[in-house]
Amino acid sequence: QVQLVESGGGLVQAGGSLRLSCAASGRAFNRYAMGWFRQAPGKERESVAAITWSGGTTYYADSVKGRFTISRDNAKNTVYLQMNSLKPEDTAVYYCAGRGGLATMSGESYDYWGRGTQVTVSS
Image 1: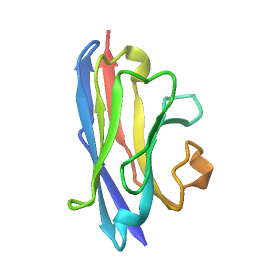
Image 2 (image 1 turned 90 degrees about the vertical axis):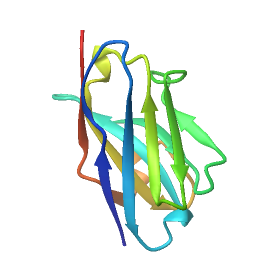
Image 3 (image 1 turned 135 degrees about the vertical axis):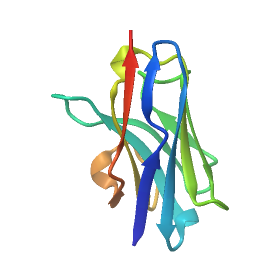
Image 4 (image 1 turned 180 degrees about the horizontal axis):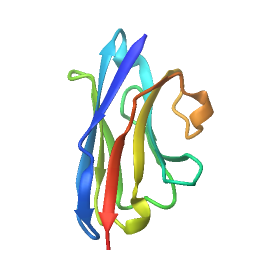
């Protein structure tokens, strides 16, 4: 079992930055691929980024490429999402998720989910 807790959300103006953190507890975090997902009101959940267990490979949605960076520190059992050049359309609840096995951008493949952190970008 892995428990995930997100933090770092908040209100920011367009063009600003935020860094989200996802702290994991439980065994073998360094063997889990991790992902970030988001869901805006009235919209379906969408994938944002994913990272392999080693951190050696990352994946991004086209909408965030060049602006967001996913990373992890296995010694701290934490995965991060650095978000720069934020836009109002980035407003959503952001969730981190974990799975044993390969990293994927498919949310249905993830076994463990946090409760989310709200990100609001004002124009």
